[in-house]
Image 1 (cartoon, rainbow, N blue to C red):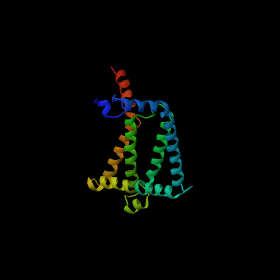
Image 2 (image 1 turned 90 degrees about the vertical axis):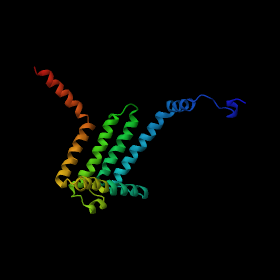
Image 3 (image 1 turned 180 degrees about the horizontal axis):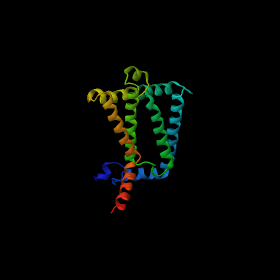
Length: 190
């Protein structure tokens, strides 16, 4: 008995067959799936924003907004932005406005923003549990910078601020602009 007879009728021995089927499905229906998923992400972002602003409510929506507020406080608005951006990028049908490294840098800046929000509020555990400032995650980041690294309030906040600025500069590709400017300056000097 041959190998193909053991594995049953209709079996093809081509190992790339499932991959070819996936590529074929993506060519035929991929753009519709991206459109649908993009619209769903934008709609979810709008619903979350309306619930954060207390214009609408619902059992699942209130649960979701409660979780966001508890864990990331005012950073919930950043989640709304990133959900909307992801939906917009899916609808564009071409490469996104930002590269993956820029997105990761901006996500890191968003995370550090939670720590800065908590630092602005004095890093109070009660505020974190109330869902204000940076929430629990922001409180943890600020506590890490202030107490665990033994930097103190001022130095820990400066460290968070410097890391935040560096992440923003990487996210908005400011380094490339600085490099071009330095190249122009270097070409102009004898």
